[in-house]
Length: 211
Figure 1 (cartoon, rainbow, N blue to C red):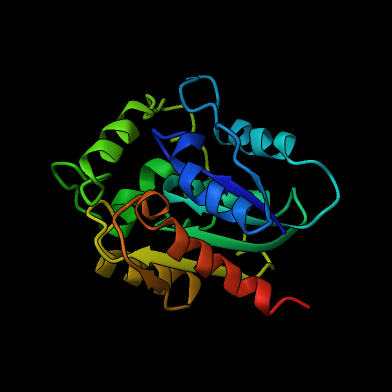
Figure 2 (cartoon, rainbow, N blue to C red):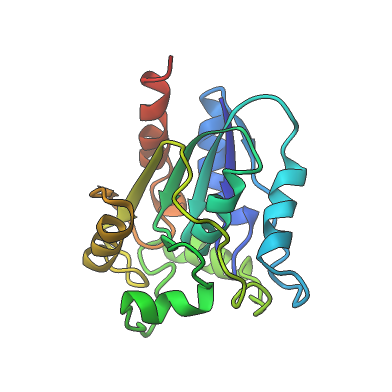
């Protein structure tokens, strides 16, 4: 199975490395490109192009989109042979919505302190902070160009201890916008670092039901 892991704002492919290792150990192919988030000239279209260019043609993919990458994953469903879209602690865009509008449109209140890595062991959290990158404003005003949700199977999983997108908040937004109750798993905003085996198990559920 081919997994395409799309990181969110201010982060990098490194933040997938524990999940990538777990999936690879289980015999799957993993592609985790670095989005051009530190390039102020790169907008949402360039983010999508970056992922498309990283994926060899042919085999269907499972897109796994984290956080802001929800805005990247939806248009990718028109560009790649997507078997399934999985949203992980992710923004769920509305048709034509801009990333910069999402916070106000959903009623999310900002949180203080360490909202990324507070659940991780100190050494891993410190390393994770070192791999953060500056997020440019390039994609923030670009509309997510879709009229209706892509006709691909979609699942969403939220992290119970997420301080950036609290569980109650993201549960509501996912239900309102996708019409489904999201699944839940342990961890904070980066569950792929704190609980890679649990997330790998969750992703594997779709494989068991595949034809």
